[in-house]
Each structure stands twice: as C-alpha cells, then as structure tokens.
Length: 182
Image (cartoon, rainbow, N blue to C red; front, top):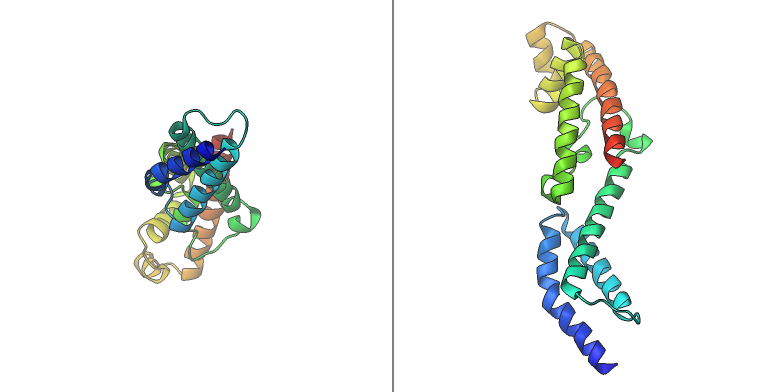
C-alpha cells in the first residue's frame, strides 16, 4: 500500500505543472483552469485506488483533462443558450460570450469557425438596412447617434432595425449551436 501511495504522489508531482499548462492553453479563465486541474487530480486519486488502477498515468490524466475541458465548454455553451441569455439587449449582444474562445482547443476552434460561417450566412439573409446597422454597431463599434446622422435616420429606427437583426441572428445561431451539439 505504501508503494502505491508513493507512486501516486510521484505521478501527481511529476505531471501537475505540465498538466496545468496544458489546461491553461485551452481554458481562458485561470479559476476554471484550476478547477479542472483539481477535478482531474481528484479523479486520478479515485481511479488509482481501484483494483484495476490506471496503467498509463500520463495519458490517462491528459485524456481526462481534455474531457473536463470539453464538458466545461459544453456547460458554458448551454448556459449561454438559455432563454434568459437570448433576450434582446439593444446595446450589446456580446458575440464574444456566444462564440467559443479561440484558445480553448481544436473542438472550440471548429465550433467557432462553424458558428462564424453560420453568422456570415445569416447576415447575408438579412435585409440590407438591418445588416448594415448590425455590422456598423456590433462589429465596427459605431454609435447609433453617428449612424443616424450619417444615414439621416432616427436612433429609434436604427434600434428597431438592429433589434430585428438580432432576433433573426440569434435564432439562426441557436440552430447552428444545436447542429454542433449533434
């Protein structure tokens, strides 16, 4: 039993720093990265105590870490897709919160690319007035006041156009998210 505990301790000490670096490269939030590391190490200790314990500890740790990162990504995506998160906010729809972070790994990179394609396709389907207001305000960061002066249109008209654009785009992005989950 003492030999098994020493082996467990040695493995954790040897792999902890590298495993944390692996997780941090894929998870933006340092607190989330630490949580994932703790979950992985806890699972390792639990698995190590089983009669048929882990044979290839390093490979096992990285596979469990990948799975935890994916689980965290899916959970975050589900939270973002909740009904409350899809309510309209005329000032900011926060595409950066809906799209997976770039540094979250290959699965997130694929999902981000697929969602960006869906966004571009959906933007092409919008009426020109809605698309122009959405792009100018949301992507280019221009104010409604400046847009109104330039186009000689009231701010309320621009808000309404963006609102319709956002409702349509969210509907399309939701469908794209659901497609990615399957």
